[in-house]
Length: 174
Image (cartoon, rainbow, N blue to C red):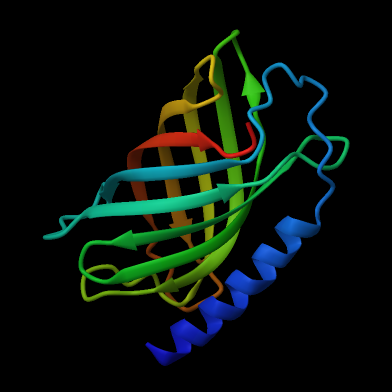
């Protein structure tokens, strides 16, 4: 656990510093841009696995878009019932397909501290996700997300796992 705590703290500190330092210009489509968000999530971890304790909870901080592609940096934490932890940084993109519905692909990297049920082959794990959310008039969102964790064959074994859950996004800028 000490290795996880020191690595996770360093990862978290670097991530927070980079999120604070990014360009704070709003997206070109500012009517839809919700500002910074706190995202709460909960769901089923290890969807294809037969786990005794499959539930997870998570919290993400989503910053403002940067670059000409409007990429959105985010920092997150996931806790799986049974003791597994995952701290990550990722990039997201809001793809609007109607006035209130947004599809959010994401890709990132993080540090995973396993529990007795889910061994992903090592602590460095990549995260690929997809979320669909409805944005309300107050810029809050509710949605459904799925993500995959994998070490990308960095280690000798690469079992990977998936998670599915519900999300609630709370704007903190407005």
